[in-house]
Length: 369
Image (cartoon, rainbow, N blue to C red; front, side):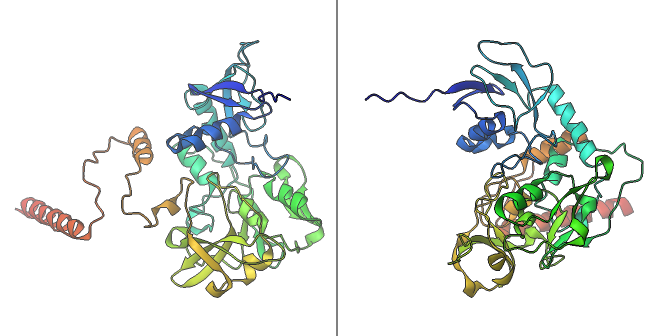
């Protein structure tokens, strides 16, 4: 009996053609392009509420809006409004514009403003700094200055369990933690209370979140609203060394990432993919109670695929200049002349330092004379 090949839809995303199965969302198609060619990671729309492992997530933050300039080959009319790519499925012949569309770029600036309306600018003291998706989103798509002058809503910090602290002031109501508790535990005791501007994540009558997988709400939070109480204020993430490890665990897969400060394991998290999404959820025993190297079998340094400051860790000697950051800074501030060589050799660095010091001394003498 002959088997027929599955039907594939051909779509064009920012001028790049790709074939995907029916039912694929625009977001998933864009990520397939990026996964096939890592140099095109920037083409994938940002996601603040969408989380592929969680059913029902997406469609809330509007960070991933794109322009569909042709609905399909049968009906090539453009969609009248921008659509959320995380919940919009592709059609055969669809043409999608993301970074190439000015309306999309301007709309994302507005989305950043709305997300930051009540969000405190406390990145210097936030444990999520360096891993924060909102930080990345604001840097890549936000405006240089804020226009908001009103009072922000604030909440008191709240311990919602023995290991998790809720800082509701930072929450952007993405619902990821709610979906996580719904889908991997049988005892969800927290959710979204109230409506509109008064909506907040909370537990019922101050009840604590206490189950074997409660710590996973920390990993899925895109901002610093849910933090690990055992790790708070211990270290900056870019000063740590993440390594992949595993152990035999009866409750979960036991596959984790250990975060080292020197020889000390200061944090244990679930492994994440290039989109910052958890691959396999882990139990609280692995996350909070196994903080010794002897508890684990070390596999090697974690491969940091997602664009992040953690990539600055010195696993490679051939680090490149952050071209994207330089371009953004040059366009928003003043033209940058960065023709200096980017070197990692210590002897060359010392020679350049001596040369720069000599030039500075000459300028100082000339000014004094």
